[in-house]
Length: 323
Image (cartoon, rainbow, N blue to C red; front, top):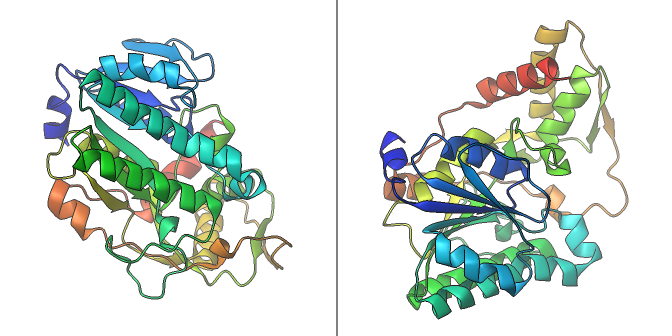
């Protein structure tokens, strides 16, 4: 990690979706590097010392010429983050996911610059997998519009990389959890974040179904480190990598883990109630997933350093101190 930090010297780094959940943690980490940081968002961004803010809609082409002219590394985290929003309005999801990539590629080609572009993809592009853990060369079988659009974006970056237009890297993120300085609604998008807040407030936790589906949870600080490594490592160009813990746990087990660890802080135990799945639950909710993370570790030297128990404890303490 220290090597990655020093390799940002004399680089300008752009982060789209800068007000979002993961982006906020990434910006905090980047501030420890010697890079110049350009934060990009449709929202008015509060001033952050040592950074530059750009209010822009990345779904429009006009901002990308400026971004590409300045940035050596682009962390692209803007776009739709909801499976259900994509199902409700596929066109809007496609536009928010694909248009920025298309305009970015066009701007890089026109400028004759080849920035490193690290894209926030999703591990759900694999669909409903049969064998665990899942390696990157497993067949991608999207079963939602959200996942299909993410895969389109990955393939566009891969093609542009092969053509020498830019240096694209896609990170397929598993279930991300942990606190963030973001004030956007995305801060509560992960199930672990949601149930932790509920447990701290003393609210009972509703677990859909039997909770026996397996998930792979990764702490947000480890995710930020993965982006930073991907931004400077040479061997990652034009490829997609799993970013996860590499360890599986059932949803049932993680609900009980949160309840037990929260009780240590609050002194109160919350009840976990099993309830039927609501009508309209997407099939992707019933997946089992554990990632094989050895490829990214071998190529880039990244591996998660925060265990689930430690991450949950840190998250509980953060939310409890800031309730």
